[in-house]
Structures are given as structure tokens and as C-alpha cells.
Image 1: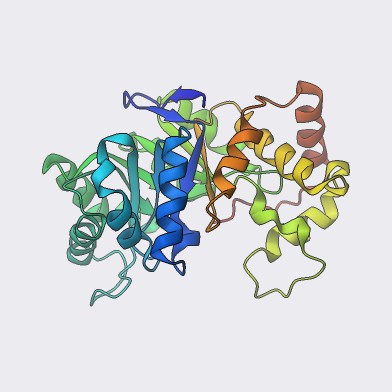
Image 2 (image 1 turned 90 degrees about the vertical axis):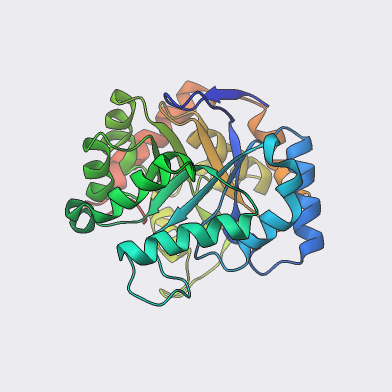
Length: 296
């Protein structure tokens, strides 16, 4: 699998990474098969979070013996069972230590603040917690995970090494709003939700369901390629995200042991033809409303 430089961190990351949110309700046996097969096939980025249920614990249990084989990212900011409010400095320190314990490691490669508002960032305390964690060797780098003007502010502080942000065929605000700024500062960039939660595959969704926003947008965007074979649609969506200038890796979540390899085979086809990429961008610019902001 192709490797790309991850900003100025010195890491060379696989273009396709693994997002750990989907494994929270899986069996340990399935997670063990999935992650070990993915590592064997060239995966070297695993991203998770303190609030993804059993995800951190599963990763620690099945992969701690292979810690040198992959870059490990996690996210913090939500209490997720620790007493106290979200974004409290003491709680943040506790959840970082809990993440390391769950992951069975002394350090992670990046800790991202998890969808932190500009208001909280401006207060400074959460940034100081991450900086202390870095000084203590608990993380090699610090990052921001989020979207819209909150992400733009985080980037412009010049403090963060890494940006994790939503980018896909139904969520393109970052292409003009934040990616150019992140690249000016040589930040590593992870695209999350790179296949838009495959929202186009649903016949109908209620407003309460997670993929609804993307589903609604895609009905208006009405891309021709979404009417093609299911694999072609996923391939086009995934390759669109990875063809976007400034994206180093895209994380796809799955609980199916063979799915990561299937996605890796699609990514191996390389960048989308420029004409198709430009058509998707043009359609977005034509249809997207002012309220089609990044999906935090």
C-alpha cells in the first residue's frame, strides 16, 4: 500500500487507515482477525477514541504485542465514564491515562482533541493538558479532530501537528476552508468519514439516524456514479477523498474481518481521473447550500 508523509511528524502513513468506532460492539475474535489481517496487508494507522465503547480495550488486547507495526492515534475530551464535565482539564488528564491503560501502551503517536469548540480552545486549558502529555512522553504529537470554523481556529493557533476532519463526496467544506491552512503549517491530515457513511445505500432514513445528513445531501447532489454497481460507487467515493490535495490518509471503520482488505484493493487503483474528480467538485459547488458545513 502507498505510504505518504504525515506532515512534519516524520511518520509515513498508509493511505488507508482504520477507524475504531465500528468495533465497539464486536467480538474480540472478530477484531483480532480484522486488525491483524489489515496490518499484514499494509495498514499502519489505527485511530480510535475514549468514547468509542470497548474500542480502545479491544485494540490493546489484540495488538499490543505488535505495537511497533502501526501508528496509534486516539482522541480525548469527553468524560465517557469519568466523573466531571467534558473538557475539564483534570478529567482530560484522567481520560488520557485511561486510554493508555486500555490500549496497553506507554504512548500513542497522536492525541487529538475530539470535536472541541473554538470557545473551549480559546480558554487554553485543554491545549495545555495535551502539551503536558507530550512533554511527559504520553504522546509523540498533538492534534485537533473536528470541522468548520472550530477546526480553522485550531489550525491557525499553530499549536497542533495533526488535523482529523470530515471529507467525502457529501462533505467538502474542508477542501477550501481548512486543508490549505493545514498544509501551510505542514500538518498531517486524516480524512474521516471518507465514504460518507455509505449513506446513499439507504432507501429512507429518519432525521435521528446517524447517516441522515449525508443521505439528504446525496439525494440533492444526485451523482451519476451512485447509480452504478455498489463497489464502483464505494470505490469512486473513497478514491475521491484520497485524491484531494492535502489528505495523507483516510480512516474507514468496519467490523467485518475482510472489509479492510476489500477497501485497500480499491485504493490501490490510485487517484481518480481528474475529469471525474472535477465533476464531483463542480456538482458540489453547484448544489451545496450555505449550511452544508463539515459534519462534526
